[in-house]
Image (cartoon, rainbow, N blue to C red; front, side):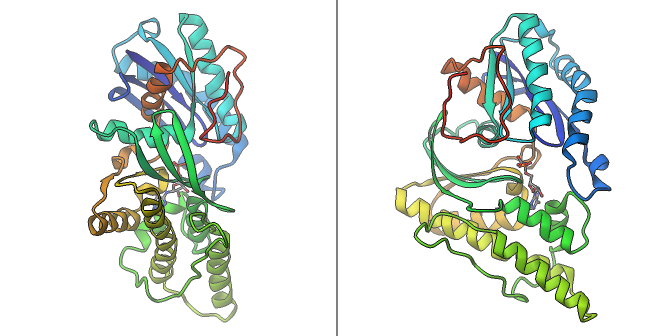
Length: 339
Ligand code: KG4
């Protein structure tokens, strides 16, 4: 079955057609990066307006690349949560209009579920159950994926997400938006032992994360150096910071795998594109004998192919929405609400 999928939760307007959850027939992403760059981050109102301008063309291209008319798809899937509310509303309303026009079911998809599902496209053999480390711009969590639609969160950030911390560190170091990827590039030849950043532990919840102290400590380091007129080596600061973030991500992942007796590890979300994180989870998996799955680099960031992949499994559970479907800025990955 063919699903038309739509994604507009942040700063990419995206549409795709995916067959049976695994085969991508088209995948169109229109990024807004250039428009937000001058502000150093995503401006929500600008994001919503650009989605409104672009969505129609992006959906049409996804259908024509797949060689289909709208009426030939079997369902319409859309990211309904979590994300920027104005941005989400554009995709949700476009999906509702399309589903109504072609008289096909409307499938709401949770954004983090679709980041996990990016792996179903990259790895045709991957099936739940597994443990997943989800690291994106707005969320960081460790969850047990018990089935395609049954999730248990076993660890989560108490404050900032890993991606948010990466973006803030990059901005503090004067690197352009989007921060995470530029920090990754600028840190390639840095000395990761040069600065000892804190390694936060959440008292009583060993699988939870905290990145706000780490974020503050890089800001303090850079500001103190500038007040003293000292020149910092960006590559060394960046490499040390990424080491601290990945120590925390890998340390908690190892504990969770041990605690739940899992042997299959999956990485998901925008930060899963980070070169150091990919190398370190690979090393960890080799050492511990885990079977590791990581999304193709092209599917780490926001896209609609992953929405179509997860949408298929939501469709099989008949999780359809009425035309009263609303977007939500926050939503728990574990919930299976009635729409
Ligand atoms: O998953 P995503 O595309 O957006 C959300 O759904 O939140 O993740 C975006 C995040 C941003 O914080 C971005 O800086 C980060 O992923 N990111 C990276 C890299 N590429 C993207 N962080 C570190 N290294 C990268 N190579």
